[in-house]
View (tube, one colour):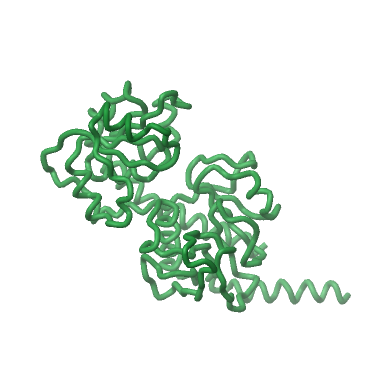
Length: 316
C-alpha cells in the first residue's frame, strides 16, 4: 500500500510539473564565441536560443551569442586560464537546484560522463563519437544526431539539425573573383601549405575566427574557390553562402561525390568532392544559397520535434 501511494504521489508531482509543458535545458556550453568560434560552439549557442525562444528555460555557462530573456548564465570559472575547452571538467561552477522532473542536459559528443548529474540527458552528436568517451555515457541517455555521424548505437532517437547560417552577414558581394584560398582544419596533411602554395598559389585564411565574419566574407568574395581537406567543416557552408565554390581536396575520397552530397545535404550545390568534380561546383553554385535558405527554414521543425520528444518522455 505504501509503495502504491508513493508511486501515485510521484506521478501526481510529475504531472503537475508538466502542465505548462515548460522544460529546463542545461546546455553544455562554457565558451563564448568571443573566446572560440567554431561550428560546434555556434550550433550550441543557436540551440540555446531556439529552445528559449519556444518558451523553455535554458541554462548555459557563458555569455550567450544570441541573448534571450529565457537564457540564464550560470557563473563558471575556468580552472586553467590558459586552457580553452568547452568540457565541463575544466570549470568550477555551482548548479542551482533544478527540478529533476523537467530538467534535461544537452551534451555535445565530446563531453564524457554526466557532470550535471541529471536524470534526463541528450547526447547531441556533432561529429563521429570517440568510443572511450561514449563508454562513459548512461545506457538511458538519448542520442540526437545533427547529421549522419557515427556512434556505437545502430540508430539514434532522431535528427536535431540546428545550423547557424548568419544569412545577414554571409553573402555574395558580386565582386570580381580570381584564384584560390584555403582554410586548414581537421585531416590536414603534413605538407599541406607547401602543396597549396605551389600548385594553386592559394591564400591562407586559416585563423579567420579571431577577425570575425565581416573579415571572412570580404576575403571569400575575392576568390573563385575555397580549398579544404576537412570535408566536415562548416567553413564549406560559409563559403557557399558567400558565393565561393568549394573543393574538397581528398586524394582518396572515402565516398563518391554522389554519396557525399546525399549525406551532406547542405553541401549539395557549389561543392566539388575532389578535383574531378569541379564541373558540378561551377554549374551549381547559383543554387547553393537558395538551397541553404530552405534548410534554414527546416531547423524549426527539428527543434519542435526535439522538444516534443522530451515532453512525451517525461510524461511517461
